[in-house]
Image (cartoon, rainbow over all chains, first blue to last red; front, side, top):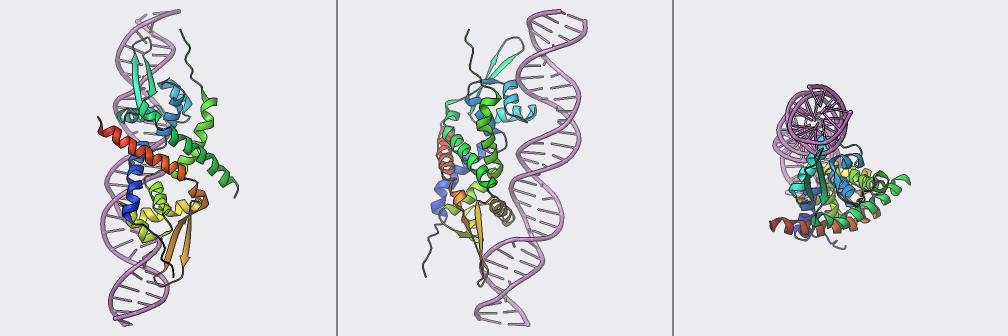
Length: 117
Length: 117
DNA sequence: TATAGAACTATACTTTATGATAGCAAAAGA
DNA sequence: TCTTTTGCTATCATAAAGTATAGTTCTATA
């Protein structure tokens, strides 16, 4: 009769809190895709809109605002003919690289895994 | 006048699809936390409930079902007094380690980053 | 027989998230 | 002046996520 090892709160807490913190900011259908789109360089509203297929103006606008508030995106207005607004990643959002890479890898793996059934 | 490098669809597609695939399965407030709770070994319904603070029975039940359907959790019924049901990670969900680790790291970083303002 | 613990399920909501559609401001240029 | 382009915002509608609370089933045991 072996006693299995099942750590309680204390042990998980160290993981759970940061993960929730991260999810609070990144959760949703669009935030990560938007960040990915900006990975290859700053882009304008319309460009992101085309890149992130399926997103509506309303959502894009809202998500960009959220991301800006959280310091993940920097918004710059250039006062030219048709107003030019560009969005770029911040150093902080660049630190998401590892998250994005691992998520991408896993996404590929998961698709394979599902097709095999 | 330099021409900035702004790849279009083609270049992002390789990243965006897998990331969406991953998000489709992992999105939401509870899935990752539940998986984390199971990282330290199989657990029973009630144990997960205590570990993942704040989740209701209904949500936990639903999320576990979703995770099972997606092959991320294995449910085992032991026919004992008070029925004993245990949930455990599958090899597939274990491949999420890297995602979880990087998310955790980033969560910590993000919290620091915010407090500094 | 009554009770208790484990794991859910049922019902009824409330709150967010996401969508669809239309409209607005500013300013160059026809 | 009218049109066009860009980057939004407003409004309304629906779907999905999440919450609260109570009830059900099964069976060992008091």
